[in-house]
Length: 41
Image (cartoon, rainbow, N blue to C red; front, side):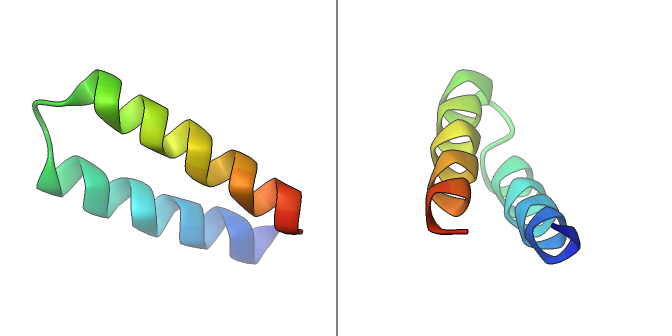
């Protein structure tokens, strides 16, 4: 779980840095990413 959290945070930070204006888009991406991680793991 720790590794997943670290990867999630890394992706989250990168996304926030890259698209600070697209909060709704960011949220959708985060939810999809998180769900995919849990599907796999």
